[in-house]
Structure formats: C-alpha cells, structure tokens
Image (cartoon, rainbow over all chains, first blue to last red; front, side):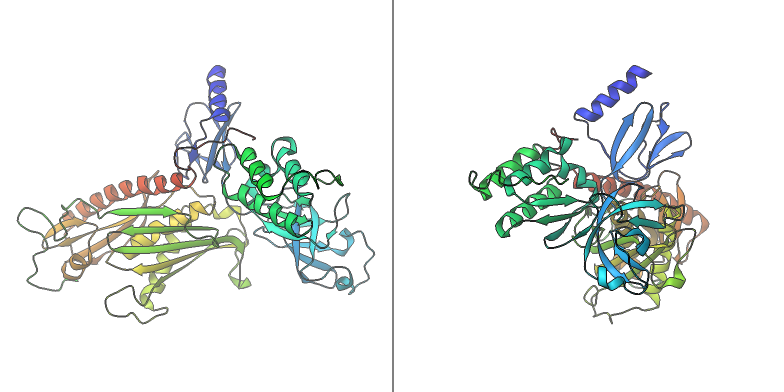
Length: 246
Length: 249
C-alpha cells in the first residue's frame, strides 16, 4: 500500500502532470478524499478543474484557475474601491469585498477622515486577518512590510500562477529583480506591484505576463532569462541597489 | 413542429437528409477558454449551431436582495443574436429566452457546489451566434465547459442533447428541418457520473415506447458529448507535444 502511494507520488512530481476535470474518478483504491474532491459511491472524484495530486494517502486536486479565495495569513495587494466613514473597501480580486477598518491601519484616523489617508484608486498591501464561516473577510495593514504602495504599476495574473512567478525558493522573482532592477511586490491574490524606471518596468511587466501565459511550457526559468537578457543588455545596471524587498 | 409536408426526412434506408443514421449526432467541436476577459469561456459547434458561453464569478451578488446567505446563486442569460436565424431575430429578451435561461441555470445549479460561496453570484452568459435547432442543448453544453474552465467547484460537467421524432422515426439530435417538420423534440441533459436527469422537456407527441427509446438514445449521445467536453478542457492545459514543467514547483 505504502509503496504504491510512493510510486504514485513520484509519478506525480516527476512528469505525470495529470489534468482532471470535475467528475473524473481519482483512483478509487484506499485513498482519502482531499481538497477539491468529493466522494460518490465509494470512489473519490474531482470537484474542480485542476491537477491531480497524491500525498501520503490522500488525493487532492490543485486548481488550475478560478477566483482567489483568501486564506488567513496571506499577503495580498488590492485597490481601494470605496470609502466609508470608518473603513475602506478594498478589491483584492476575491468573490467578496474586503473591508479595511480604521483600527487596522498604522495611522490614527479620526471618524470621517478616512479619505485623508487612503483614497479610491490607491493601492495597498494587506494581510488577511481572518475569513469567517460565511466567507466574510477581514484584513489588516498593521504588520511589518504592509503599506500603501505609491508610484509603480499594478499587474494582474492568475493567483494559481503566483508560485511560478516566485519560483523555487524565490529564484524566478530574484532573477527578474536583479536583471530589471525593479522593486516588485507579489500578493498571494495574483496582483503584482512593480516599480522601476520606464523600460525596466516595462520589461519586468512583460516577463511576468509571459510567465502567466506560458506556465504549461517547460523550462520557464530559462525562457524568461533569455527574454530578459535580450530586452535589457547586461552590464551597466546590474547590481546597483538591491533592496531587500520580498 | 408537427407540420405536415411532403419532405422526406428519413429515406427508406434509414438515412436522414444530412446523411446521418438515426443514432448519429451531428459533428461536434468544443473549445475551452476562448475569451480573455471572462473568468471562463467555451465555444461549441454542434452541426450548424455556433454557441459562445462565458462565465463570471463567483462574485458579489447585485442586486443585494437576490443574495442567498447559504449558497451562491446561478444567474444565466441565454441570448440569440439577431443574425443567428434565417429571418432577422428581433434582438433582446423574449419569452423563449427567459425560459431557456431559467432551465439552464437550474440544470447547472445541480452540479455547482454553490454552498461554498454564500451570498455570491455565478453569472453565465450564452450567446447563440448561429442556430440550427438544438441551441438550448448546445448552450448548456457550452456553459458547463465554461464553468469548469472558470475554476468553479462542481460535481460534474453536464452534456445535453436532444432526441425526437420525425417522419415516424425516433432520431438523435434533430436538425432544423427535422425539428420544424417532425413530430417531437425531447432535449435532455444528464449528470454523467450519476445519470441524474437535470433537464428534460418535450415538444410534440410520442408514444411511451418511442419516448423511452428517445431518452435512451439521448443519454447515449450525452455520454459521447461528455467525452468531447472533457477532452476540450484537458487540451487547454496541454501545449502541443511539450506538456510538462521540468523546473520549479
């Protein structure tokens, strides 16, 4: 039993990237139903379009698309949508609005003074405090690194591709940062904020869009590297200021 | 429907006017993810029918009073383009499109795991670009592919296909002529994993035996269609030949 699981696990991580669609049987056997799956007559079936994954003795499906669903502790980037007298509504690309209360910002805001600090169209970096049972979201800006993002630009990609943009232990994003010399913040919700001068920021934006579009293709890191080196001749602006942002 | 005419719809060999046998459905082409701005989309051709479906959501439900605090609601809009039929169709919502929107939304509600998104709305838009009988089935087929493409949690994908009666024969997937000059039309949609029926209508008259035979044939057609729907979704995530990611993750 265990050896069989191991083999399947291997298959999965190596090259058998198996795309499953809702309703597909995920190997009855003795596997437990994991995330995005359901049981029907003793067999586990996929509950979403995604990639099948077997870990220990649980089958789950990793979604390939869909809306971002906030999870406690996620760092997200959003745009202020609406202003209330004691809160701001932030669009983080989730199915539900994310209200940011005045008590959750690093400033002392008097009642009704909300627009002095953040206005509609401002981009902020937030952390998900909690998502309750009925999917109501609460967010905070009171943590290290969380702030209003000024200047720069916002790029939106699918939240399922955030891990590809970051790469293995940050390799991909580090490479983009080094070559383009941009400051880049990535939200778990697929919103990416890029700040740098004209051409560099353009190239970084294109590189990220490229990752978003070509996720299924192999050797992505190599491709992106080639693209970046073609667009930005190496040498002069290589290692000027490395800001320790993440 | 039930109009009498001299047209021979099925010849003595059992071959229909478009060359199909009684149990054969029209040529099907399905493509997923054709629109960039929608969360999910699909394009379906069934014979001369051309249908585009787009899905948005789950998203905040407006107007507010439609929200359901326990589950997401499914809103569907079926629309026929003015140029979709021979004579220009008067654009806009009519009684027929309201009916089809309603039955489509209700069929889809059966497979979408709406309980995961309380107060939200999942919006489905079906545009009929070209019609040749069987558009509600083609629309539902496209809509369920678009929903899966949008990454919406669901139990299964719904295929839909009609069977009917023309010239005294029970036929699968009626075309325009068979629908207009035939005796009955029975659109059917099923949940393939459980064989639940989620849509069943009948226009015209049939005997009980003919009806049972029609259902049997339509279920068979639905299953064939289901394979094509799954294939369309899988194709979207496999780039010709080179499929895999050998680097990170």
